[in-house]
Length: 187
Image (cartoon, rainbow, N blue to C red; front, side):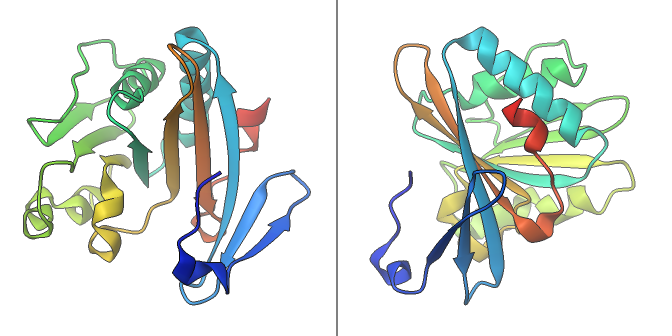
């Protein structure tokens, strides 16, 4: 579970939904969040989870924030996700290139790493420009939390937490107003 900053504690309410996930209500932001987590024990389970997510997000234009400490498995998850989407070439971390674009038959996947850039530089990455295209675009942004409202609002946030050599917890946070339904991930 994420720690809630002191500023938010007083007005943050938690509710249990019928799907047994946590819903956060943050009144002044006006977005209701559904949150749930899944544990994967090895890379094969991570691939299976990426495969389920790719099925649920196929042909959708979405913004996804991908979070986790260094070495948590963000690039590994992206490699599995892209393979499940039909991309079978080399997948590299965008740590030094800042943005990697993967053209697929049905959509475009944009994978960005914002760890080393400043707020002034974020505008040059033109995330809204990708979303304005007619072909569905999925914009995956690592280290987005440092930029707050400068980035487009996310439709999904995934936080990878390292629990052991190969074991990871993936915490999914979905704003209810995003329209994403990720119930299929839990099966």
